[in-house]
Length: 202
Image 1 (cartoon, rainbow, N blue to C red):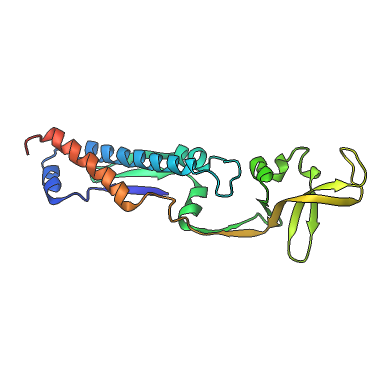
Image 2: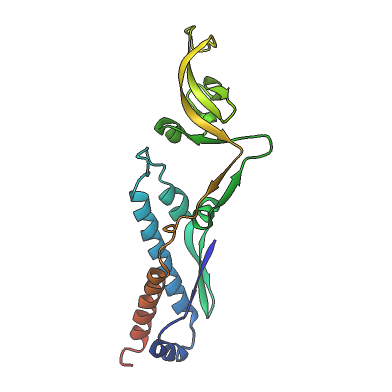
């Protein structure tokens, strides 16, 4: 997704802008100021940790902040891009669907969340047992009546690690982005400072 920075300045600043021979450097500075504001916001979100208290995957820094950057400017606007499909779901919400015939694996424990995909489970996906009921499909770390690393004797217990679903619907996160006020404020402060350096006695 992209964020466009335009010159919605006060009349006094707009009058000063009109005197500029080249506006692109100003738009570049405003775009970079918005980039910095976004980085600060995502770093703060990352510091909040996982809402369930599970080990953090550092989504906001690793996926969002890392892929947020100023990408260009014209004489009238600047663009900041956030190159993350996962983040677009955070902003807008939506339904995530598994590939045909497959499932999405939703972690049910802190351990599963830290591991990520069932394919990365210690011992591989085969170390988990699929249990199907009328209401759900889960992968459990099963305990068997026969001991041994590869044993598949009678299951006498286990812990559900993943819930398998064909799709999940994610709600939009109202705090995914900073408020418009913060972004516009960062851009306008930069605009004001830039113009005052050029026209210090205006």
